[in-house]
Length: 161
Ligand code: FES
Ligand code: FES
Image (cartoon, rainbow, N blue to C red; front, top):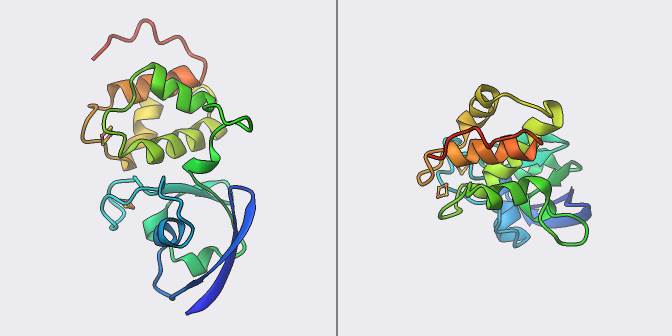
């Protein structure tokens, strides 16, 4: 076991981890940040997506030790400062971009990552960017619609699924 320190959602945190402890495991079991979901543990589903130093990362693909000193953001850090839903989160709610919600934290983190570099993506760009995030419920249509709406684009002409 070794001590690891990083910044998570603006706070400096430390914990004891094994060399093999995944970032997703540390966030969930070490810090109690269970909004980061684990669907596969094998980099297939994207449910564990977080941001590390501003970049989208699947938390099950990196060891906690390897992000020592980094700035990590999880879904718990995505709401506005007053606790209200962020623009992206609100868009998911408004456009029914979730059903069971299991994939949603990862989808929101991936969407935020896309909009940070491409504020007005096309539908194709949104679909391409979310390819690493699997949803078993929605058929993706309303997720894509929510991301486009969050980017300020008119989605009224996009047919409901
Ligand atoms: Fe990490 Fe599925 S739990 S990609
Ligand atoms: Fe259920 Fe996406 S809403 S997996």
